Image (cartoon, rainbow, N blue to C red):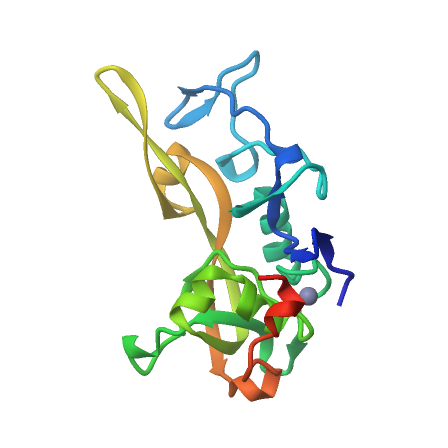
Amino acid sequence: MSELLMHKGRPVPYITAWSGEQVLQPPVIVVGGGIAYAGPTPGRGSAGLLWKPWAINQGVGEPLWKVVHGPRQRRAMRKFLCQVCGGPADRDKRGWLWLLEDHRDEGPKWPHGEMTVHPPVCRSCAPVAARLCPHLRREGVVPVRVGDVILDAVYGQRFYTGPLGLVGGEMDVFLMTSWRARWVVGGQLAASLARCTVLDPAEVGIETPAPREAVGR
Ligand SMILES: [Zn+2]
């Protein structure tokens, strides 16, 4: 485990954004079958995607507890880094360690094909993540080994052309291969998970979540 970044006695996850990292998003305009930021050379980034801009100043200002820092989230997804400490995520012969919301009621194939924007975790951080992440506390957490991770989608805000110009729609997940992705200001990478093995929580030490004192809440 890498060292946890702390703020007022609480660990701050690697993917959490800080107030010192916020930057103004330039206005979007229509360019060549999609949107781009207005500016001297409007264009989209690699793979034709447009990403919400962030400064990289981890630890500067206050943690924005409910906001994910796009560039760190994408780095964690691409390099299989722990979402809590930013160190290497845990892996064994069955795959990477992921904590998922408990959706076993969706059927026997779950979580095969599950899409997630939450990066994997390391062993030491699994109990911390189970306690820190609001969605895991709410839904219940299931540890899973993931053999295949396909980074094929973007989570972001879709823009539409209306009579009064461009309007922003709801946040959603869009396949990168879809034309719709060219109309999205992306925030995070979404992964499709395959070759999944559901684990006994005790196997990764999350039978009992980390004590409240350890996470400061
Ligand atoms: Zn970790």
